Amino acid sequence: MSASGVTAAAIAARLSAVGLRPRVEEHTQFTTVEAEVPDTLSAESWREVLDAVADADRFGLVATSLNGRALWAVVRKTVPTTGDVGGPGYQR
Image 1: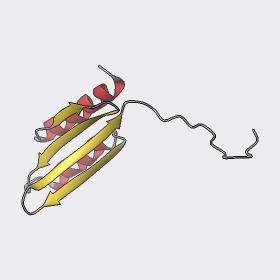
Image 2 (image 1 turned 60 degrees about the vertical axis):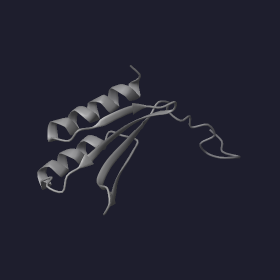
Image 3 (image 1 turned 120 degrees about the horizontal axis):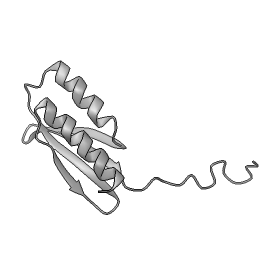
Image 4 (image 1 turned 90 degrees about the vertical axis):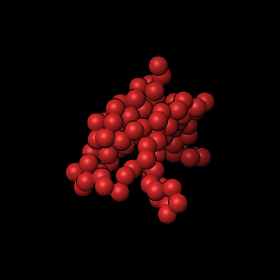
């Protein structure tokens, strides 16, 4: 399993511990974790959910009146290179 897969699996496990039912999907450049969030989720559980997704590279919440609330998190498979951090003319 890739490093992103391990991180995504850990996020999913923490979300499961809160009572959510996460789905993990592998993609070419990243791994995603998604879960439906019930309206009844307690404030304490929300703190645990936010702590869990904080390990992701990106995360968010989509809320609609038609589909309810869905939490998502993305873990990149490759670490971006810094390249020319200082820009043109930067001297080390």
